[in-house]
Amino acid sequence: MNDIPRVALFADTFHETNGAANFLRRLVNFAKKKEHPFMCIRSGEKTGNFQDGSVSFLDLKRGRASIPMDGALRYDPFLWKYKKLVGKTLEEFAPNVIHITGLNDISQFGYYFAHFRRIPAVATWHTNTHEYTAQRLMSVLPFVPGKARKKIGKFVEYAVLKGLMKLYFLAQMQLAPNEELVDDIRRLTRRPSFLLRRGVDTEFFSPTKRQRDDDEFILGFVGRLRPEKNVRFLGQIETAFRQANIENYKFLIIGEGSERSWLEKNLRSASLTGEIFGEELAKAYADMDLFVFPSQTDAFGNVVLEAMSSGVPPVVMSGGGPKFLIDHGKNGFVADDRKDFIETVMRLIKNREQLPALGQSARLFAQANSWECVFEKMFEYYKMVVNFRKGIRA
Image (cartoon, rainbow, N blue to C red; front, side):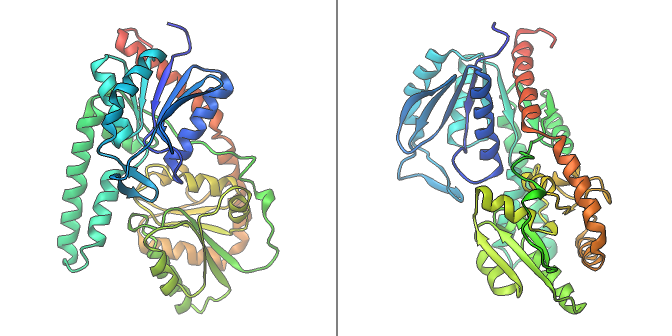
């Protein structure tokens, strides 16, 4: 085998606005830049093959019967009509390894061809689907008593996770963005599982792009405005501000989702921009004073790392992956619970002189996590999974 493996990536999400799609777009660009032989199977506006440098693309058009999943992401139960096309394209490309990115329609092809053509597969974990499912279910069950809702949520979360692991087991190697997930996946699949963090573009997300010179305190949030992101908790922070007679502040909330209308109605001092991109997004990050991220369902939290790269210290919850980015008290804060989160934010808005040093430490952490390093490691794992299949020690 050539030292550089021939990789076929099955990308469930690619064009959408989310952390997984951002990761996969950057991975493809890395392969092209390095001139590695690479194939990307993804959704597209029309079905067809094309070449871009060393990267081969196969776009599959989802039909009208596609089911909405999350934002622009959809699931097409009839995508299997392209089975022969996918098989023929794979045969011509002759991959050494298949990269599977989830459980949606595109990745199902990856599992199928990896299994029946005996091609070694690596699966990357991008979304805590089990936690998202439980959170969204509980959000539509407000009439169920609190303790019962919590039990139902835990049961659903566990059941979905067990189901996910039965499918993830079909890949010979699993990669996850935080240590807790790595341990859980290894335990439940009994497959080799390793850590693969996400990266950040530290030149693009930079404190040098800050344009504000006023003294208003800006609390930032970036992400999908959905129940699993716990965005209504921002209302509790504002309530605490009002009770403490704190006025010179504003929430800067970037993103779209079903919770936007609630936020617009219930937050008194907030700017909701919707989705923004490019330089506008980078400048918005840099203009924040504190990044507040109350989600407990994120596997990693790309937006937290982007804020840190912009010199903005974050406050995160102790549940989920973002806490692994934080050196508590040095480049941000990990709150034990809701009360601790609010108290931390209150302390910082009253002691703003602490923010510059925290922001500098956050920036230094981000600079040590470049995309180049992440994808070099990704290709090391590709080689490793091929060696696992051959029975060769990597």
